[in-house]
Image (cartoon, rainbow, N blue to C red; front, top):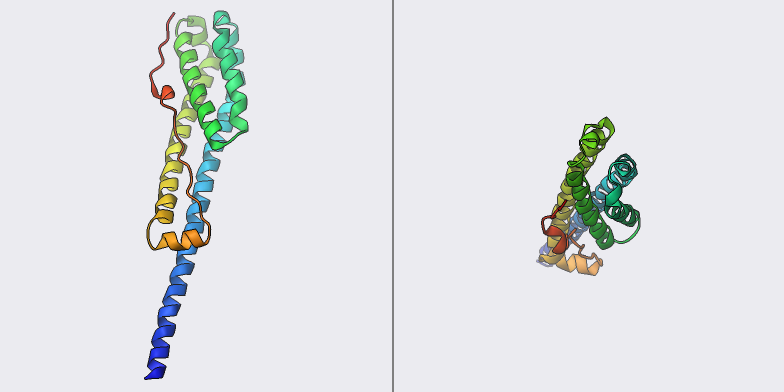
Length: 184
């Protein structure tokens, strides 16, 4: 009788150990997916960072009176490379808004619109903006999965013991969600 009880106890203990190992590995995998998703956002922000000087140089000659917008884009561009996720998020949103303004104002310059270089840069930046949006969504999906695992019982017990922390979602400021008003 004692040996059956001992085997049952060892079986239960083995199941608990296997569950802890599986949960730990799952949390590690989710954390790595979140880190990878953030890296993908960084890759796209870097791509946009590299494209912006070309766009500004192309547009400069045509839009002399729009130097404020061009200066703002240049200033915000430097915030994309360094800083926290929150700072990068704010800079990214500001640049998106400023680029929309540049493209809207550019419509008033037929020669600029006809420029192959401008068209190419506009298409590349537009594609990059789409990739950034997708990367943000992918990141937030992975953050939600990780945070759920950290918060839900019984995996939350293991996550807390192993000091897993919830991640912050990639957010857009309320001010930056409003439509841009362009006036000529």
